[in-house]
Length: 332
Image 1 (cartoon, rainbow, N blue to C red):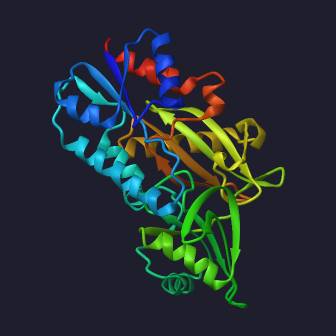
Image 2 (image 1 turned 180 degrees about the vertical axis):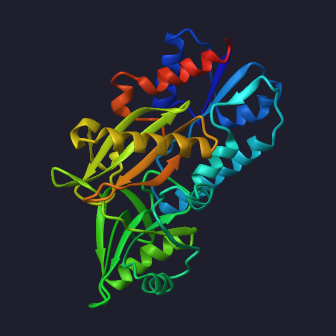
Image 3 (image 1 turned 30 degrees about the horizontal axis):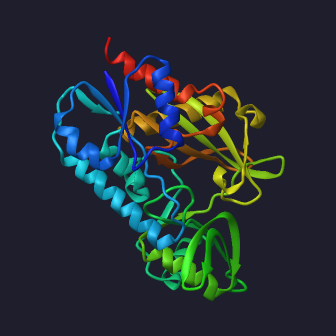
């Protein structure tokens, strides 16, 4: 069975996956999305892996336009008929669902997800009304669509002093707002309002800010890659701040360093497996938060294209190797 890897252009993750497959004796071909849309009706005996587009855009509004364009491509792919011998590793429909943070929470009703406070806010004042009604003055504001912490804001309001503070990758330069590769701190109503309302105008959700457990004085959460009904890889993402994405110069640590009990490890594994299956994904990168003190697990996000972990890729390469093995098993 042939494997087609799809991205807007070749990149490190597509090349590494293809090298893994060729080393294991599989036939692999690269296509961009336009080529796949054209050729999909004529393909047979093929497994298709859809990778997210790669680009260097850091302006938040332009980034969101690219995200919308990509979602349109996935929706178009979803409508194209194809042979029964063709299957997607993760379908366009399931990836679209996982890209939508609000829809993901609807799909995972009954799971311990980070609590949603609201969606569709139009102003910082409207958000504050919600915060006061819920008695939650520490929240995360996130673009409804997107990944990699782009546009995410950790916001606190002090009801006694009326002071705001926000931590985010966003920054202002001239008339544009950019994503950076570091966490910036803003205080004051006008600063926070400008950034928060920019995110809101592109559609956003607000979640309760749950305090994360710590390792050696740093906050951490877990990125867990689950595929084919089992956990393949786990990395501990540590940060002095509250946003832990590794591309923001945060630290990757080994799971053994946080001393998970056997029962807690099993609980996390089961949570990730069931979430992946519920989202109809063959594989997923799942972000798990453990609360400080009592280490209760919460599911933050499910990423339908979140299998790219450098620590595994340059280590034992479990993730891509097991994906290829699963694809090869379809021929048996």
